[in-house]
Every structure is written in C-alpha cells, then in structure tokens.
Amino acid sequence: MGKFIVQLLKKPLVQVGLVMVGALLIIGMGWGIHLTQVPPSQPIQFPHNMHINVGIQCLYCHPGALRGPSPGLPTESKCWGCHQQITVRNSEIDKLASFVKLNKPIAWVPVAILPDFVYFSHRPHIAAGLNCENCHGEISQMTVAEPQKMNMGWCLNCHRTRFKNDPVMLTKLTDCITCHK
Ligand code: HEC
Ligand code: HEC
Ligand code: HEC
Ligand code: HEC
Ligand code: HEC
Image (cartoon, rainbow, N blue to C red; front, side):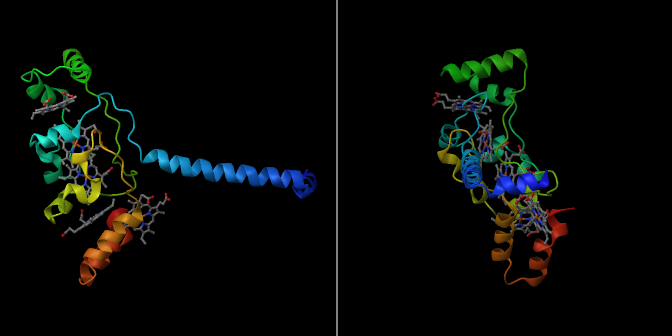
C-alpha cells in the first residue's frame, strides 16, 4: 500500500492534481479570512450609526464595559423603552416589536469574541483611558458591528508599544499567564 502511494505520487498528473488541490485550499483559506471580516447576518439590521448620530452613548447600551469583563448587549425591552415612543415604523422596527410581544430575546450573532482560553476584561482597558474605537473600529460609521482582527499579535503589539518605557508593566503584559490563566 505504502509503495503504491509512493508510485502514485511520482506520476506527473497526480503531482499536478496535488498542486491544484493545494492552491484551492490556500484560496479557500483566503476566502475564509475574507468572510470573517464581513458582518454576519443579524436578526435585526440594527443601525449603530443612527443611534450614535442622535447622541446615544456606547455605555448606555453596553454599560458592563466600565464595571467588569464584558459590556453586554441591550435587551429588547431596553430598545422598546425608546421605540414605543418613536413613531417611525419600518420592517426592522416591526421585527423588534414582535420580539417584544413574544417576550423573546433577540439572538444577536457575536462578532467580537475571543476563544475561551484567553482572559480579557474591559474594565482595566477603559480605566486606562482607551476608547472603544481603539479596538472595535469606527462603530459610528457602521450599521451592525463589523468584526475586527483581534489576535494575539494585536494584543501584544499594543501592550509592547504602550509600555515600552515601563519594564515592570511590559513584563506583566507580555507574560503568557496574564492572558492565559
Ligand atoms: C435611547 C433610545 C433608543 C434605544 C435604547 C434604541 N433606539 Fe433605535 N432608534 C432611536 C432613535 C432616536 C432612532 C432614529 C429614529 C429616526 O430618526 O428615524 C432609532 C432608529 C432605529 C432604527 C432605524 C429606523 C429607521 O428609520 O430606519 C432601528 C432598526 C432601531 N432603532 C432599532 C433598535 C433596536 C433593535 C434597539 C435595541 C437593541 C434600539 N433601536 C434601541 C432610539 C433608540
Ligand atoms: C483593548 C481593546 C478593547 C477596548 C478598548 C474595548 N473593547 Fe470591547 N471587546 C474587546 C475584545 C477583545 C472583546 C472580545 C471579548 C471576549 O470574547 O472575551 C470585546 C467584546 C465586546 C463586546 C461583545 C461582548 C459582550 O459583552 O457582549 C461588546 C458589546 C463590546 N466589546 C463593546 C465595547 C465598548 C462599548 C467599548 C468602549 C466602552 C469597548 N468594547 C472597548 C476589546 C476591546
Ligand atoms: C442603542 C443601543 C446601542 C448603542 C448606543 C451602541 N450599541 Fe453596540 N450594539 C448594540 C446592539 C443591539 C448590538 C448587537 C448587533 C450588532 O452586532 O451590531 C451591538 C453590538 C456591538 C458590538 C459587537 C458585540 C458582539 O457581541 O460581538 C460592539 C463591539 C459594539 N456594539 C460596540 C459599540 C460601540 C463602540 C458603541 C459606541 C460608539 C456602541 N456599540 C453603541 C446596541 C448599541
Ligand atoms: C489598544 C491597546 C490595547 C490592546 C489592543 C489590548 N490591550 Fe490589554 N491592556 C492595555 C493597557 C493600556 C493595559 C493596562 C491597564 C492598566 O493600566 O492596568 C492593558 C492591560 C491588560 C491586562 C491586565 C489587566 C487585567 O485584566 O488584569 C490584560 C489581561 C490584558 N490587557 C489583556 C489583553 C488582551 C487579551 C488583548 C487582546 C484581545 C488586549 N489586552 C489588547 C492596552 C491594550
Ligand atoms: C496580551 C495577551 C496575550 C499574551 C500575553 C499571550 N497571549 Fe497567547 N493568545 C492571546 C489571544 C487573544 C489568543 C487567541 C487569538 C489567536 O489565536 O491569536 C491567543 C492564542 C494563543 C495560542 C493558540 C494559537 C492558535 O493558533 O490557536 C497559543 C498556543 C498561545 N496563545 C500561547 C501563548 C504563549 C506561549 C504566550 C507567552 C509567550 C502567550 N500566548 C501570551 C493573547 C495573549
């Protein structure tokens, strides 16, 4: 069997085939990476831009960012607190109304999410004076939130740049244990 595969791998046509499969895999990976930058389809086409334009603060809808690890998302009753008083009606507001009527939570698809083996908390980052936009992009220009690249190199890069003149913090914030408990 082993010999058979070795013989097969020596055949030019098989080699061409393997190269093509490899190329397709690489293209596929590129496409996969591309797809992750496009927002997933959400249950309601929530417009961040319109809400930020009328002056609603990020923390009004995502208050947990000041207090702890996660900012949280507004409940449908928080949305309705405003929208039952606003006369504008369209298909998206109708969807909101039916979630409220059925008392059903809106199943938003997360876009800013790290694997479970990473420790991250908003509170110290906000306390250090960072803006939401430093990490989440120009949300005020978006409708639904668009995914940003949030990998280990990105975290480390900011920690290294900010603390290049503070050896104690630099050591702490680049130590594996700080982010992988
Ligand atoms: C603090 C008040 C407030 C809260 C909370 C709020 N909204 Fe809005 N929303 C507004 C205002 C004001 C507008 C702009 C209305 C306009 O000018 O058409 C708006 C616009 C919208 C629109 C666009 C309507 C259009 O004309 O295209 C949608 C959809 C919407 N909101 C959904 C939601 C959802 C879903 C939530 C909860 C996750 C929510 N809103 C929470 C005040 C609020
Ligand atoms: C230092 C970078 C950074 C800053 C600054 C930051 N975030 Fe985040 N945010 C993240 C990361 C990383 C995640 C994913 C966390 C996870 O999955 O554990 C996240 C997740 C979120 C989520 C989804 C998680 C949830 O609780 O629903 C929301 C909403 C959010 N951020 C809002 C905000 C807001 C609002 C601000 C500003 C007040 C802010 N973020 C500031 C990095 C940041
Ligand atoms: C009126 C309420 C409202 C306001 C104001 C608001 N958001 Fe959101 N935010 C939402 C809702 C609803 C979602 C879920 C839909 C989506 O992903 O866009 C969301 C999602 C997000 C997410 C992705 C969360 C995840 O689970 O992956 C981030 C990041 C975020 N918002 C940041 C911000 C920032 C930064 C601001 C201020 C510039 C802001 N938001 C203002 C309601 C709001
Ligand atoms: C834009 C800059 C920036 C980015 C991006 C960033 N951080 Fe930080 N991080 C900071 C700053 C500033 C502090 C210091 C806060 C303080 O003064 O204690 C910090 C502190 C921390 C701490 C120590 C505080 C604590 O909770 O114990 C952890 C853990 C941490 N970051 C994890 C992460 C992870 C994980 C990521 C990527 C998902 C990340 N950070 C991305 C700027 C950043
Ligand atoms: C500032 C925070 C931070 C520090 C410090 C950090 N990591 Fe990570 N690490 C992350 C984040 C965020 C991810 C998940 C995203 C990714 O895969 O890039 C991750 C992912 C990983 C993974 C999984 C990679 C994969 O492709 O699935 C390994 C292994 C890892 N880290 C090892 C380490 C080691 C070893 C150290 C110390 C030398 C370290 N990390 C320090 C934030 C950090």
